Length: 96
Image (cartoon, rainbow, N blue to C red):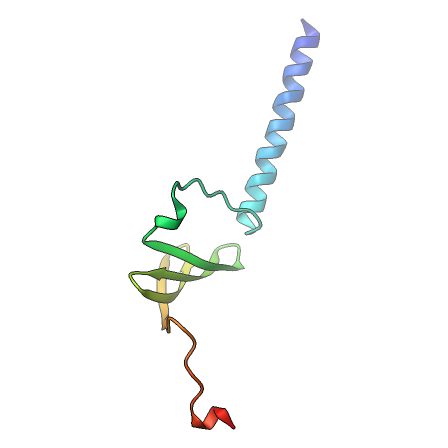
């Protein structure tokens, strides 16, 4: 019976360690868990995510034909800029 408890405690310890590692990785921005079905059919798409600090993140998001730059923090989410859909063509000043 003592052997059974020891094996159970080992399994709990290993699973707890894995859960702690996943939590740490997600909070540091190293791992993402995406369980969405049909990711290509989404209306809102996160094109890029850049963690600035553990609590502040910069996002490039596409929706309804628009691309925007957003920032998020624990207290708010703000629009920084609306980005052009494609890079602008070089003007006469940039062609030289």
